[in-house]
Length: 81
Figure (cartoon, one colour):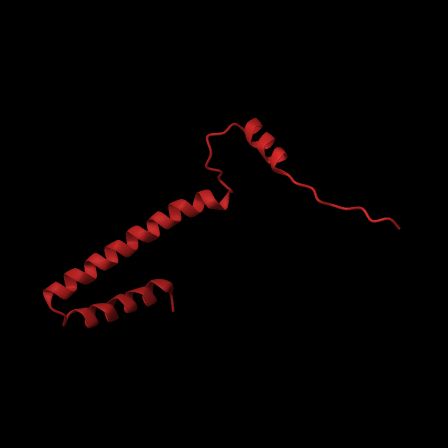
């Protein structure tokens, strides 16, 4: 079965479930579906930046590298053999 056929059958099934609801419930359902679409769209836009390790800072590369170097703490102790 093709994905398009499956999607059409799913949509028809949902329509059969929804057709007996009252108007206010249908409007509430529409509002919730709309909100879920907006949320999923916002997450997709943010995930693109996160996929490439986007760094949100106004600091220049040199200043960032310098602050990272200065923040390093080494506590390695060398034992006598």
